[in-house]
Length: 138
Image (cartoon, rainbow, N blue to C red; front, top):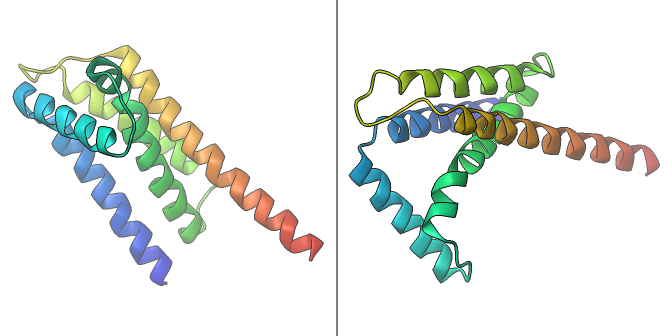
C-alpha cells in the first residue's frame, strides 16, 4: 500500500512538473536551463546550453516514464500501460503548445518524449526480469 501511495504521488509530481515547464515563458525556460547547466558543471559535467536544451525532453520523459512504470507495477495494471500513457501524455504536452504564443509543436521533441518513456519502461522491466532470475537461482 505504501508503494502505491509513494509512486502515485511521484507520478502526480512528474505530470505537474512537465505541465509547469510547458507553460513557462521563454525567459523562465532559459533561466532554468542555465541553472541546470550550472548544477551539472558543479558536478563535473560540462554541457553546452544548446545540447542541454535540445535533449531535455529525453530526461523529462525518462523520469516520468520511470515513475509511471513503477506506479503501474505497484498497482498491478497491464504491463504496457505506462508506455501508452507516457506517449499519450507526450503528445498532449506537444499539442497544448500549439495555441500558446511563446511555444510551438515540435515533432522531434515528441519523438524524444516517446524515447525517454520507452527507455525508462525497458529499464524497469529489465530490472524486474533480472531480479526474478536472481531469486530463482538462490
